[in-house]
Every structure is written in C-alpha cells, then in structure tokens.
Image (cartoon, rainbow, N blue to C red; front, side, top):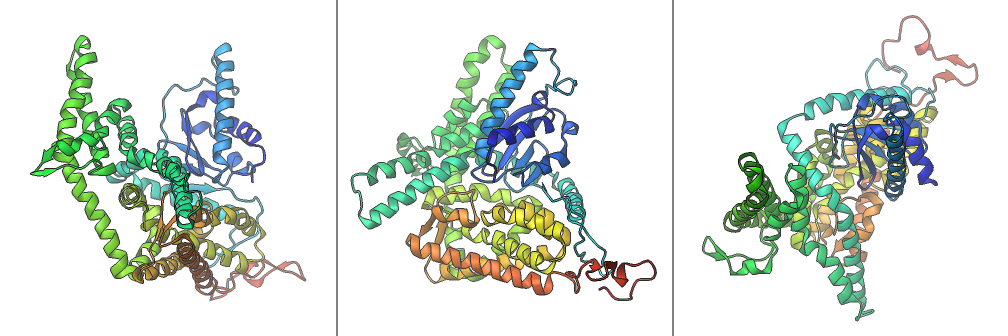
Length: 535
C-alpha cells in the first residue's frame, strides 16, 4: 500500500527521464500511463524497485506503471503537480532536464486496456524456483521475471498486426469512460437496493437520474474520444455522435422503419465519429484556409450526420440487438459450457491482445440491459490465476525470492490486477499458466451453470474484477447474485490451486537448493554428470 502518493510520484518522475521526457499523463483503473519522448531514458529496474509499484507496462504508444486500484489516481495527481512544477523550472532554466539532456518534443498518447505486457516488480533475492523442463535448473524470481519479459517481447512483436492495432485504438476510446461507468454503476446499485427495501422513496428517483444520465449520453463521449483517437476534432466527433441519442430522431424513417433514440448505441456512435473524422480530414486537405473554418465543420456534421441517420444507426442497431440476443441465448442455453470456455480462454486472449474487442461488447450490453453478463464469467480467469499462484507459493516454500513476489502481488490479484502474477510467476513457469486457465474455466462453468438455472450474474460497469466487482454486481437480487459470483471465485481459487499443486509443477520443485543440515548443494546441483531423470 502506498501511504504517501507525493513521495511515490517524486520517486517515479526522475526514473522515467524527468519532466522533459514526459509528453502525456493519464491513468486508468490500475495504471499510470505516460507518453515518453525517449524510451531509452527510463530506468526499468529502479522503477520496479519503488515501493508500491506492482509492475511496469510497455504497450507501444505508452509506458505504464501498475500501482493498483484506489492508489493510481492519487499518485497521478501528485505526478502531474510535480510534472508541471518541473516544466516551469525547466522553462526558467536552460531548457534541459536534471540529467543535463535535451528534453524531447515528440507527443505521445495513452494506451488502451489493462492487460498489456507487464514486467512485474520482484524481490532481489536469489533463491531458486523450479523450471518446467525435464532438465530442471534452478530459477530465481529475477530469472522468472526476465523470462516473462522475453515472452512479452515476443508476444508484443506478434501483436504488431493491423487488427490488434485497431483493437488497441478501440480500447483507448473506451478506457477513459470506465471511471464514469463505475461511479454510475455503483449509484445505480444503491438506487436499486433502496427501491427493493422501500427505503428513502424520495431519494431514489434522484439516484436513478444520476446513474442513468451518463448512459443516456454515452454516445456523445464515445464520439468525442473516437475523433480524438483517430486524429479528428473531438467536439465534431461528439456532435456527429450526438444525433444517435437525440430524441428527435424518432421522426426520421430509414429502410421503412422509424428510428428510435439511442438505436445503435455506442457502436453507432463509434462508426459515426470515425466517418466524421475521415470527412473532416478530406475537407481540410482540399479546402483553402478561408473556407476551411466554415465549410469543414459544416460538411463534417452534414455528410456524416445524414449517413449516420440513414445507414449507420439502422445497421449498428441490428448488430447491437444481435449481440444482446446472442449473449442471453449463450448463457441461458449453454451456460455451463459457455462459462467453461470463456473463463478458460480469457487469459490466452489477454496474451494475444484480443480481449480488447470485448470492451465495446460489454458497453453495448450495459447500455441495452443495464449490465454485462460476460464480465463476471471472464473475471473467473483472475480467480484461477490467484489459486495457481497460491499453489506455487506453497510448493516452492524454500524459494524465498519467488514467495516474496507472490506475497506482494496476491492482494492486487484478489482485486483483479493479475498481471504481476501472470508475468512474474505463472507464465514464465509454464505449466502454472495452463492450470490457472483450468481454474478460470471451473469458475466460469460455475457462474454459467447458475445462468442456465435462471440466476443471471451481471456487472453494471467494466474495469474492476475479483473482489472489487462485488459493488457493481446486478441480476436477480444483489444477495443471490453476490452469492453466485462469490461461489465462482472460490471455485476458481480452489481448482486453480489444486490443479497447480498436483499438476502444475514438476516433481521435486519444492526441494531446497542446499541440504539444510549440511549446507551443501544437493547431488543434482554438484559438478559432474546429472542424474538421468529430473529431480
């Protein structure tokens, strides 16, 4: 836990190259996201050693420091204060930072989802852990971290595809909306609880209005962020997308059917803003400056607005309806099997970067139904990861370095921040990552089974998972929903633990490096021929 956000921010700023090297600052649920002018000036090892830092992330467009939920906002505010003060000092000086190097001028932007490659913070001790190959060698927590970094580097290279670039940009559009989704989701939960209990009837309408207002206008925010992400004017993107939720569209007929306000939802707003951005760029490239100021915004709103009304809203509405219908059918008909597959495959999806495609789907379901039924199932992958890490902790009881890493990362893992455990423990070890997926599959099947039985578990916002998701649960009554979700977490923990304990590590993985009484290396570690079979 970070007790002094200002001290943490003061420790981080020089390690990322000083104020002149930082081109942008933002944060999401768990990470401080920085745009950097010169990546080579970052001291990764020193950053990982800062107390309270759970890991670091490099996702192409941004450099991210994992601090955890509830902490990152305070540290970001302190970081921005120090950054502003440092830039004022630089402007008054000779234009150089504290290292005596010229500050960069290149801009940066923040990256998207909370699941990019993370290099975890690990303890510096050097007690070995077990490898997963037949010819087992002694591994330290540092060695596992290096192996995790190599895996991430290779995965990053594989992720540099046009499809995954688009998915990351989509994530960049929706991630800034998560705090508002969370806040409104919790207020909606409070309003629902008061309504069910018939308490404070004079207050519940106000709470309902507060929780619903953002969702009623979310298309405008999506349009604003989309235009910003794709290089257009943000307010024009918001203006074009606003037509999706304007009540007057009920008087417009497309394909023989009257449109409904909100038809197409966030998908329609996303498409409208992208179209508007391309129209705006086309106009700016061809119109002289004297006409640009008048005609470009006019044509952007007119052309893209009409196409949105007569084409995009109808098409996006059909897609959004299909998404909601498919999600309901999937869980009510094949709930246990669907939960097994989704819970088991989510960690690999995160590795491949494909999980970012789910963000607009979650948002569409929340907009349509008030909650997303997919997130609680996908959250079971984190439960399997926690169970697997706990099993590694128990089995490798002589590896103090790795156990220290697990102890520091488990609290964050319980709250849904699983990257330090994934990239510092299970993925480098190999088999524990697979057994973590088994635990996630079991937890997902548990939640999916109850969906088949009529108890639907949903989340009113995206972002949190693990135990942090409880305040955002919705469905068939909070107590029942929380019971099913909690049962899924416990199932994921238990199966992930047992699968890893019995199958996730090679035989003899927990044996000490030295015989405790003689303080001598084990025979397998002494010079000379190795035994024929792994220890």
